[in-house]
Length: 362
Figure (cartoon, rainbow, N blue to C red):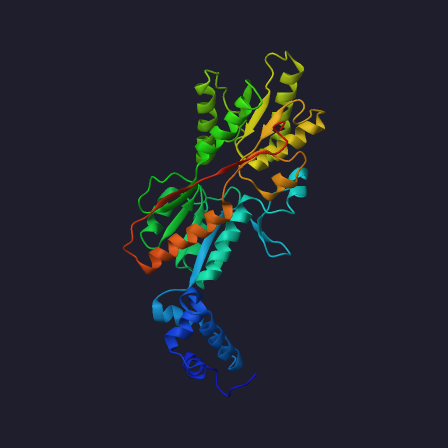
């Protein structure tokens, strides 16, 4: 490596590579705009000159930090393999599943990859349990150009005020606020398709729904579940709502189901449609501890398509949502609005895919 007396500048790299300073800048922060052979030449020149792009200089020149933020629920951990992970507590089944990425991890992976592709840094902050999220949000917002926030991490008035100052994408939430971009998936259609699978393929008639219907996306999934039952003139039971993280309540819900299974079989539930894979995995584990076999005694399905659902036994029948795409699309929407501030806010709904495993009886 050639060492220089003074710190190398963008002008030195441009001269060495035989390109303009703009091309050097693009090679680092917008590589998709530079031909691969040109970028290789720029990177080689930068390596020879020990040149490091100055984030502060870019911020002064463009009024930007070149950093994007992501606000999530819970305290984040950095696993050795470098995948962002949300702490899950001490639930045995999820501790075993935790070697695999969960929903927030896979969305975060898409965010991380897209930031890298566009030449942006990513800052992540977590909202502690019991916190309003306002402090974590304000701290993060002060250091980035735009934000991705998970549903219900920030009080609505705070979110609306900040959306006047910077682009914000909210994930898995209703698109009622025109100041925010929203990215969601077809929760209702996915849950309806899963319920119809149990009704049509397995001829089940007594189904239950487990999920927190106070949460917007889970409420939409319950709506899909209910629509499928009503289409066949079947009664719609109230949701077995866990009112929080289902792993803390899986034992209680499993005991409720076990008591009903031990009673009159003509009234006992034949299947359970769960609002998330984490709910489903925790429930199957709790049922197994009570001696109830899935799917032999009762069918169980999930929603999300996390990796753990595929390697768990029985393999979970679920609805897979494009989690990585959810994250990458959020970043694309942010960068479009940073580059074009007058661009209208967008609400995008992504499709989902039923995935048939063994937990339904297939």
